[in-house]
Length: 326
Image 1 (cartoon, rainbow, N blue to C red):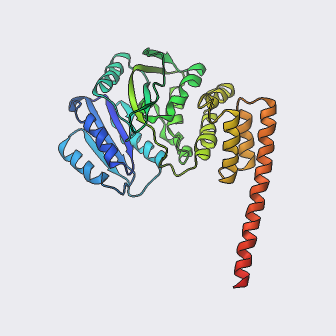
Image 2 (cartoon, rainbow, N blue to C red):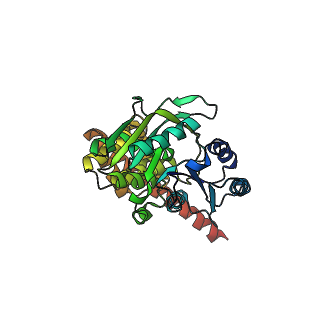
Image 3 (cartoon, rainbow, N blue to C red):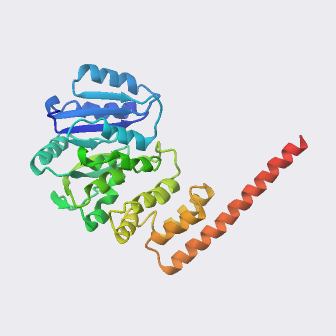
């Protein structure tokens, strides 16, 4: 059995420079304390070259390269399945951690022996300007039991996979297959495994999350944040319907899930064909909207869906006319 307590598992794709920046920190930590696993999703840049050097020079670094891009969710599952230590810390390739933070994570895992851990973070622009100073303003480390209130309050942290550390043996990866393609597999991986278990909130130190306007999920923002987020949260049936509905709108309550945000994302979701009318109507019913706002939202779904259908028919007729002329 591996005597090391923690594996830092890094899912990566086409970010060799950012991966190298992260690894320059991780490799300074004592080899005897830490395993590092890199799961490369068939990167097309020089990721394979730099990782080949890492495994030659460092006995605690393991590298797996997928033969093809399996998508974000499947690669995260592979990060868990190929880790061999008691705990797994999922770390995004474009985030940064300090040696002090790594040390605090390991010390608290040894002392508190939680089933999982959430780590505080600050969100930065590439220029290092702070966008969100901290996810948790309390700055108090505490051990809590995962109940309905904890889920509602902290599930939004799971949008940042780097915040999550989990005890490997409590996760059933077979339960995660249905989430492949959502880009939020870390939510059921973490929260379904931790219901009524002990969770360590490490709040007095920070991951540096570098925010980017672009992502590699190959999905529109309306599909990702409006449809997928709400669907995945609502599927976590270990928690009550009331808690799941609260958790959905606890993320970006003044943005995506404000009334104006809902209208904008509904419009884009229909035009992008991100979900059908029935799916969008069910999402509306979960949100914290007034009766009037729900009525307006549902009318918008009907009107924009009809508009889109007419545009499709009009386009098909134009294409048909062109071919008939030929």
